[in-house]
Length: 64
Image (cartoon, rainbow, N blue to C red; front, side):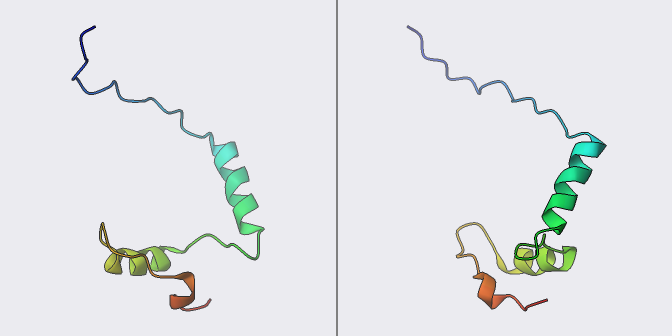
């Protein structure tokens, strides 16, 4: 049997509909203990994290 050395075909994903995306977002926003990150929080983590670095702990981030 010949071994396939080619890259596998790319996977195809279906995007969420607007209604599905809205339902997921509302569910995330309704959880007071686990709020979604803001753009500012993502910018802070991106500034400090590089591949191979240790991720900062949640307790290191400023509270809301």
